[in-house]
Image (cartoon, rainbow, N blue to C red):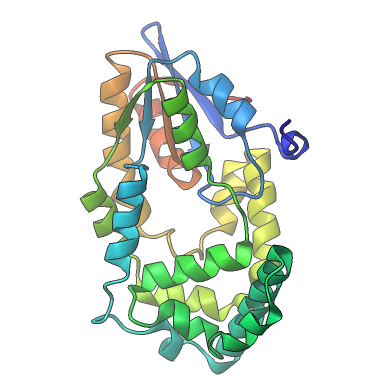
Length: 275
């Protein structure tokens, strides 16, 4: 029996895209989420033959991203660039998270005393800044779900045709383009993260794009490399597929405003749905 059913939320970041009698769906995803969306995602994916994702999500491709991110010897160290107060607070919170994970796993508490005294440095030293940031962010969030991966596994299980809007090389290039200063500034504001996390979650769950865009402006990935340069690429690829058949496309929710605007400019009807 699935004991997580009660945690599932309705998905409100879904848009119906229609033109010339053909209807496709555009879904804004959260790359990290405290909730599963299995039921909603299954309902969305079932009617379609082809499912589109930003980029490859198989284990081999994901491992390649991590391996690339670990080759950061020539990049500046986040640990050295952060304010002393932020370093202290990040280490404190990382230590608390480690203790919680060890306790929940029933492991020997001696493990705690064998861990590095500077956990932040252990996550950021010798890696590319974006991997260091995502390692810290995902560890402190402790949100166990990824809508992209969840949808990908459902599409696989339903034997759907899976296509990608970009290559791994495209993704890695975009990640390398995240400004170092944006990552540092966000990490320095660790004292605002609890409020930010709750605002982020509520904006996503409500499907309020304007609120979501306005309150995530300082997040490191809200930059030209990740959003402005990729939105037109995603739009063109989704449009090309949708002109051949009805499809469902999954992209990070931050891409929805730009892609939605481009579809409207091309004469499509774009209306929000709920799954």
